[in-house]
Image 1 (cartoon, rainbow, N blue to C red):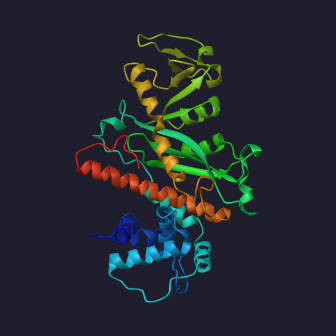
Image 2 (cartoon, one colour):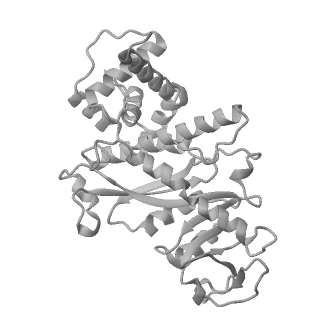
Length: 356
């Protein structure tokens, strides 16, 4: 029978195996080449090993830098039967290697692995031939250093600097489609506007528009995607044709007369959508799908989980390393979602509503 420590080592080795499986060396070399960070001389910590290390930091959030490096090297040795005989690098050497690497390779890696993963036959991942996706945001707390103070303190009351993250996720699988982040001083609507680049005509974007307004609605609609947003005060919208399902058409002046459909909900919230034909999707169907916008909670909450205690979310002490760490977290989350859906597909089940 294995001892608890042996079980722990096996789990650690499997975690490193997970990294090398979903982020193969060929992919890392491609990312390194695109990012222009290939080494001109041989180093003890080459770029590909440093990328694996930054990804491993996300899996072992309760370990310090030295411990994570030892776990990584042991895991690589176990997986490849390679035995290293040199002393693992110090924390300062690791920090220098991370600084040489920068954030760009992890951003490029995220762009390579991100995207929807739902299969066409996954009925819960589609509605009226459209792929429901949700946009939402959160803030991540970073260590208080002179450099990190540039991220700002939300509302002037926060104890630590914060980074604002906004992402779009596929509802059925919780897989990330795109993400961006910036200083907490940057308005969420500004970051949300960057993510309009990821929208496609076969998507249905779910969001709460209270903090974004009709301007972002108009810009999102111009991408060709369909929209389903929760709003307050929709009873002030002009009422046009009414439908049997309780919804009605409206042509707000702020949208230049473009039609939208209004769906009353219990309480003070209403839904507005570009799906103006009830035959395409009924009010009850749209309300049920809008209730699933909580899928973003699992993605955004995972960025917070078990990260250096209840206060500090990230561990990096400079803006460039914070960006590197955030991209790495998003990469690892996306890889875990894809593996979960692959496993569900092999079992003939749906990964809809599965949580990491």
